[in-house]
Amino acid sequence: MDERNDLIGDMLKSKKSTPLPGQGKPLPKGYLQRDIFQNFQKVAKDAGYLPPWLTLQKEIAVLVHQAQSKQDIATINEKIKKYNSICPPQMQRYPISLEGLEKAKTLW
Image (cartoon, rainbow, N blue to C red; front, side, top):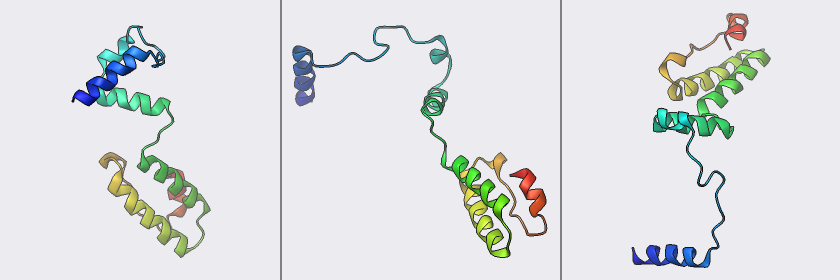
């Protein structure tokens, strides 16, 4: 613990720390009204982060629109299985078939 205190003390004495953007300014009103998870979601969204299940959903949508054979459908269904294991329960989807491909294109 003393090493950390010494390190911080040395930084303060040397004044080599650069001011952070927004330093000394009040926090936005919405920041205190949201919980920690909501604040994280906003920061992540602003930074362009997408959860893995959303990137997989976009990948599946592209594959569904390009699918033409049973092998393509099998590959898509494997990805749907993985998607269902990581997405929120209300977002889960059923596997698709070659006969139901046109309907799947509208859903994805």
